[in-house]
Amino acid sequence: MMLFKPSNRKLLGDVDKKAFQTMLRFEEYLAQTSISKIHAELIKIRVSQINGCSYCIDKHIQDAIQYGEDHRRIHLLSVWHEVPCFSTEERAILALCDCITLIHQQGVPDDVYDQALEILGQQYFTEVMMAIIAMNAWNRVGITTGRFPEI
Image (cartoon, rainbow, N blue to C red; front, side):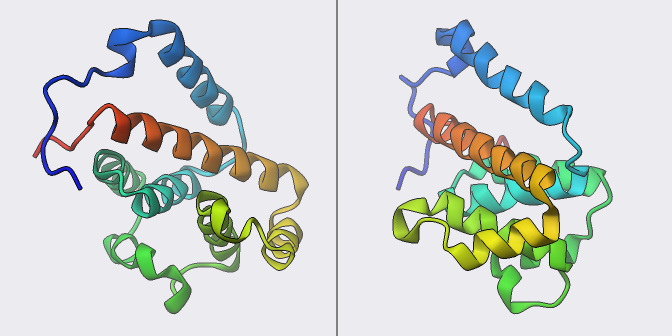
């Protein structure tokens, strides 16, 4: 585990502006979806927790607080399955976050998929799935290029 920013790593946008713009277009798509701001931030924080992306965890906790998310729910997000403070819809989203992010472990089990589809509906399910995929991509960019929160 790296505890410092390596001096030889460069930010994606500094090296390949086209690649960075491609990632930003993904964000433009997501901004046009019906995903609520709170759901979007819960997705970003949870995926980043699983992937261990400190930069994204820090950034999206700040964003979630700006959008009115409760501090206690943010603190409990890593143990969402053990606490009752997340709605049925949020639990379906968080289960998808866990399964899609850790897809190499068991894929996305039918029960998780079917329950999320029933609760979210096909369109919202698809938008959530794409938000999870995008956040996984951002985490991989951030971790690979050595992004850390500036504290």
